[in-house]
Length: 355
Image (tube, rainbow, N blue to C red; front, side, top):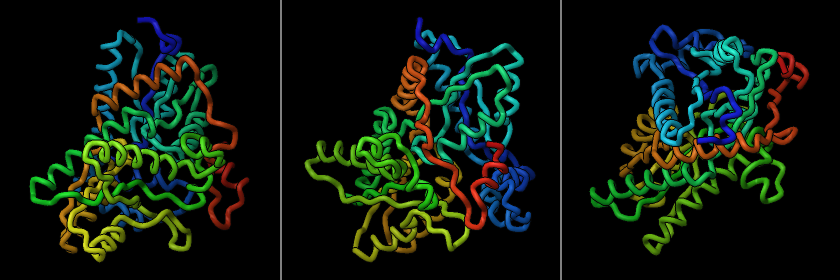
């Protein structure tokens, strides 16, 4: 099968990375926090989530599964293009992968980042990684955020249905739907975009929250068509980090659960629409911490699955690869700018990042 994808030498799955064993945890966190002067003692405290899972992040196995699913879908369409994987913070490092591609003769690569929604950390930072590590003579185009694509919505809709049905089997009808995403600083949220819903509304920023709200609205609309009633719902966040004085998106998922219990809600579906797969923020923040909060509050909770390797999602990603190859539009100039940390001038931020 001939497609615009044949004009590329490889597809790069570009991800965050994560430790594979206990001894990897602190070195991995050093990579994540490079330039922030955080002592190892603090990193060890942060790394306790990974310690609970044997020091192994689920993200790498999730990426291996996604690579296999993408390979299968590409092959089924007759798209014989090499598929490789590189990470920002752990092996296989994107710098090494790009160097290997260039050394093997590749001159044009299409990158797919494992972040569905637009923000600095979910999009622009990957572009900075590419710019910093791309060898001379190699061009890398990046797929734009795809959280509002139908495949991603379909996968999450079916996951919410399954979680709702699991609660119904336990005698809990009409649960509250609590959509969850990774929290980010308010300053980053306000400057996210312009892509997706925020751009359509003429808003130069705010695309991260707008994208999440658009996905939630389509899921709720589909459920309303099936049942005749739109479920009660809300949007919450998890995995807040950084100085307490810096405001982040709220409410925290645990605070949201507390508020629901106080309202008399008895059952809740927690739907992580901000994540492609079961990252540590899902398996710890939701499956461990939020689940414990719900149990303490007497809330029946069912956690919806992430998109993972759902066939509609994988098929949609390949559709995106093909359409981007035909029209590799870059992000708009100034989209999702690098946040400036308090007390550090923007010029220092650029020097530190290599941009």
